[in-house]
Length: 120
Image 1 (cartoon, rainbow, N blue to C red):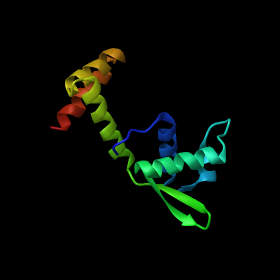
Image 2: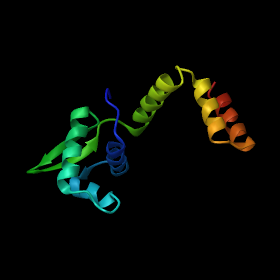
Image 3: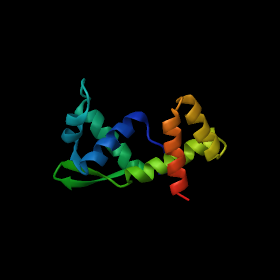
Image 4: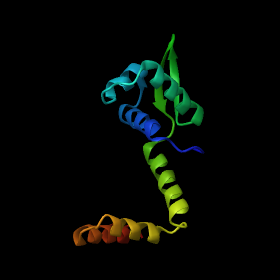
């Protein structure tokens, strides 16, 4: 997972994570309209394989893709990268930013405190 996913790649990975395994046509079915071209999705899936996020099983000329990286694994790495690059490696700064930016209610803050206390 050296390279981060683009927004479009993340959409494709979310489809793979939800479905488990999928052919290009299965992925296109899950995309919003206007549907991307078969060749576009096929190319993007090859890129995801090259980046190490997905792999495939060959069925003649068709490929059935599946995720190699789990959603939770990617989420953790992505949040760590955000913490390190935008908040100087500080979880406190990151949580404080989100609490202020999202104008969390007292109940939501209380829930976060509870979660943090339980994770000790």
